[in-house]
Image 1 (cartoon, rainbow, N blue to C red):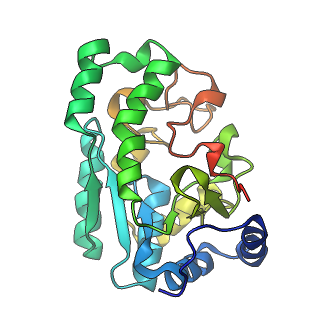
Image 2: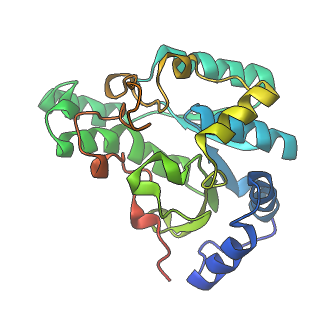
Length: 248
């Protein structure tokens, strides 16, 4: 590993963003793997963007670190593509599940589908099933890679290529596809025959937990199927809050 720094200053972030902000995703991935080696990990939910990153990373590194958050409420199709990715690339997928006692307390108090009743309840569920497991997944990491794209949501339009994740100790958060369009993602998948979630072919551009995801109608925003009962500015689960912005 070539870097021992855990946090990045605003100046360092600007330097790296100036260098890689307009580069292709493979360039920033190559930098991240060289800079952090086994201390960088990909957060993979097995959506279209994430499987693209798996394909790119396995071309650059023999055994890249990849993790997923198994909330306990994923679609069966998501597990299918997880197995397909394992078979195709021979990678190990580190799986993190929610703490059973925390799920039991939440469901006992508010029911299994509490998220439909309020934004606060939905964020509580995401906190138990996603945010807390993410903290364990990133323990000891110095950087993580996401499949965020600026065109995905109003909450992501100002996201840079490389940022400081203040919520997780100031580690680097790297978004190689931030400037890509949806068309570029699918062109890559088709050109490289990358396994993908078959729900995408059924009108699901964005895929999360089964009860919180639906297919969208023609002309709807690509995130319209996520937490469709909420307004767009609330549609984050807590994994990508703007606490990730540079703090120094």
